[in-house]
Length: 96
Image (cartoon, rainbow, N blue to C red; front, side, top):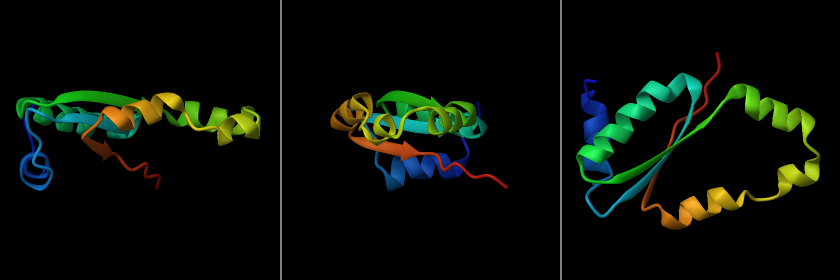
């Protein structure tokens, strides 16, 4: 996989990811290739990475089917990841 120069610049120059970092990358199916590119570049910089994917189907079914009280509750897994991470990269969910 070739690394676009903007990914390398974001990881190495803007975020200054290094060996002490733990990077969480949150993505959607349609941005998975880009998320993988970011994850590999972070690993090339010595960081540990966690890649988490959300799908449209899962998101919309949860919103449509789950009781509102469950949707309002904070996800303890997400909070735990934020406690461990030194950096987060969120892929934006864009629909045309």
